[in-house]
Image (cartoon, rainbow over all chains, first blue to last red; front, top):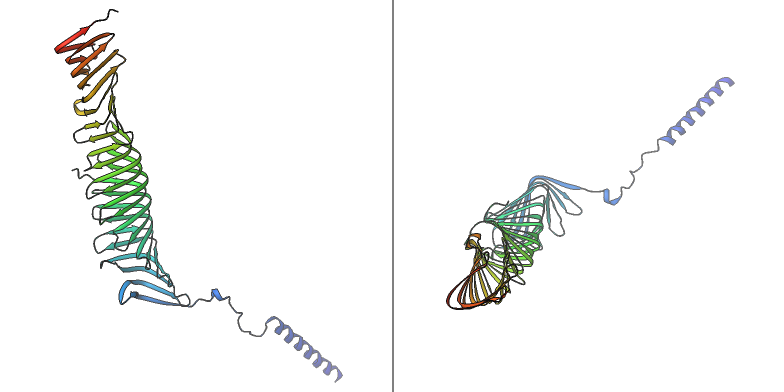
Length: 184
Length: 213
């Protein structure tokens, strides 16, 4: 009898130590650790939508894209395969396409990259590796292999700055203008 | 007016397409047809076809080179150079306070105080016109020709100089002409010098004073 009780006691001890061992390694499920604030982004994604910016009821620009992603906190917008329409002060408009674009919600500036191509309603064309539309200044900035063709004038250079009507244009770095013919 | 393309290159260019005005700064290079203009700054009006280049300007067109501090170009053809302008073409060098050069006519005129240097003589006058295509120059007022090579020193009111080899350095002096060569003095109304051959023709009343050597 005595022998039986000992065996039972041993079993209990083994079971208790096993349970302890088990619990020590696998703590009870706790609430996940708090993630640092900046890694916490929640984004809204839209497919085949557009964003419009107006001022005094007048459209400043309209952005259409295959894919739009808005950062809920910063309200900044990432766009893929952008087709943007920018309304010029004098009434015309410029259509700009770019594989990548980013809109800064504070400044409303739109930065476009990879291969930017623009065509204005008066026929002016403009290509660059990167471009930025400044809503506050109503200006277009471009950089990298810049080519702007207006009537029979071709402007090329490293960087360009133009008013929204593409009438007053500055070219910086290896600037060249060819009037009345093809650049050599 | 030439409608050939105009090419303007620089460090920075501003273009006002409404006014048609281009303003270039730094390492300016302007090309039209076979004329190349370089300088530090430039302004070109594509509507009026007027260009203004300044800052160590150099204009090269075929074998003609124009150096000056400032150059204004009109209609892509007529060039006015000021600021120690020097126009060299072939072996001729023309300078003065201002040079007007017409590329279509290959013609230059210098007023105020002009000097034309050729291989073997220096011609100065109040005004000199150079007809490059004819290799001919016309000098007006206080004409003075000096040729060290030929030991010649001549003055007159007017002069026409023919530079081509066939013309043997022919120079026609008219109006109070006076030529001194190796001590001999010849005066007359019209003297024709053949500088290559040291020959002088005289027309009208003339006087020759020979100095024995």
